[in-house]
Length: 78
Image (cartoon, rainbow, N blue to C red):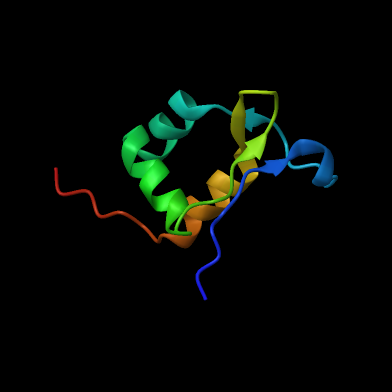
């Protein structure tokens, strides 16, 4: 069964995890476009969004960093 990922309200997640990152910061941090991040989120291949306002979501910086670390090292072909 494929459960649809959902945004987790910030008040449901009581563990301190640093600061929130909004989409432009997340995109810059991971080197992916917003549509790619959204597609990966919907398929469960990206950390969950956290609702931080009525119409605002973000990601815990620590979860983005952990996700990046789990992806392995990127080889620089420059």
